[in-house]
Structure formats: structure tokens, C-alpha cells
Length: 316
Image (cartoon, rainbow, N blue to C red; front, top):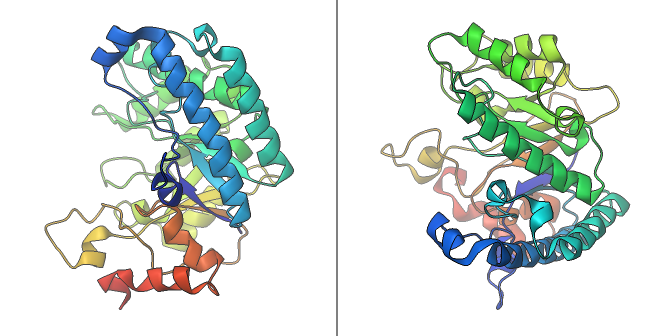
């Protein structure tokens, strides 16, 4: 089992100059400064991705979710049209080689505006464009076209008829390139009106994509299954030769003892590693403190990290 975190390294982000992969800009800035400036930001982002991967490896962190902001506004111009494309490609190849050599699992979680279930053709077209950009980035890194390097999404809508929405997901899946199809996974939701693991089995049975089990989401949308039942059902959808990924987070409301906070909101830290009921999985921890939330569990003998476990009132 490996632990991972998402997108931002808090430790490196405090350095001067800070190391980050989510430099971006508002649309007006992009319109004013154009593709050249977007390329500059992208080049800085991929350079810093390499630094983050090296830091992760040094600290025994073997799973990392890259930021979807690594190529700002790429859907407006196409990565290959950047004046820095060759330099970016070379660095991404180095990042992929480093990850592969050191056993670091790279994943991504394209944002909530990706809606393959949408009845709106323009929304679906935009979704496909964005997913293909993610696929291209992973191809440039030389990553496997399998769920080992997953591109994980939610269904993100019911539109009054869950069954029809899932049928649209399956139909629109066929429009995706093999690069995206081979990596795509789908995750259970944190609202009872949305998609449980049990619901998502329909999509898996139609098109074969794996289900990513989210422990925290399951608390709000069980689909009539226990945690163990839902976890094991999701695990059963993964290829036998690929270790499943699950997501874990804890409630910010419980950590802070504040019932005005939405219970679905993620806490800064976690107090435990969840039971995997004997299954070997990789756990992506979706805590706001990022790498600082998992280091106490990876390096419990390091006093500067072990103290982080007591930062939450929920932990005491």
C-alpha cells in the first residue's frame, strides 16, 4: 500500500521562489498575453513538477496526482501549438522516466466541468477536449495507457434520469481516444441523489472502466452497501494486474467541531489510515494539508511530522 496526495506540495510552495505546478491566469489575461505567456507558465509548471517528484521520492511518497492547471488554457490553443512545446515535451519525458524508474504512480483528476453524462452536446465536446489534453500530457510523459495512471472523473449530473445519464456516459466514452479510454476511471459521489458504487456498476458492466472508491463520499451515499461491501465491489472492477486506487479524507466539520461547516468538506489532516479489509490498494489522501497530512504515517519516527497528528481537535 502506498499513500499519495494531490497537486500541491505545501513544503515546496513556501520556498522562495516557490515550487508549484498550478500557475494559471484568468481568461482576460490569457486573451491579452496569448499563447506565448501560457507557454511560459506551462514550462515553469513542468519544471517544478520534476522538483516535486524528486522531493516525493526522497520522502517515500509513491503516489502523486498532478494538477489539471499544469497547462493553463490549453483547450483554447492546443499544447502542440505552444512555442515552448519541444522543451516542455523533453521535461515531461524526463518526469515520466523518473516516475517509472522510482516506482511513483502518477494520476490526474480532471475537474467537475467534465460531464460525459450531459445532454448538452457543447458540454460533452468540451469535456472530450479536456480529457484528451490530460491524455496527451500522460502520453508525453510516456505513462501507461491503463488505470495504473488513471484519469479519474465523476459523472457530475443526473438530469432527472440517472439511467439515461449513465447511458450517455457510455455512448460518449466511445468518442474518446484509446489514450483516454484506457486510463479513465469513475468515482462514487457524496450526495444521495448522485452515483453510489452500486450505481456505477452499470457503467463498469457496459464499458469496463474501473470504479474508484471514495471512503468519505460513501458516508453520504451508501447505495445500501456497507463500507466493506462498497470497497470490495469497486476493487472487483479493476484489472487483476493493476493495484486499485481509493480516495480517503475526513470531515472538516468533525475535525473543527463546527456544525456550520458542510460535513462533506475535507479536513486539513487525517487521524488514521482507513481499513482496506485486507486488500492491497494505493490510497490517495484528499486532505487540505497535502503532503503534510500523510508524512506522519509514512515517517512516524520523524518528530517534526508526528506532531502534525495532534493539530486537529478531532484527533484529541
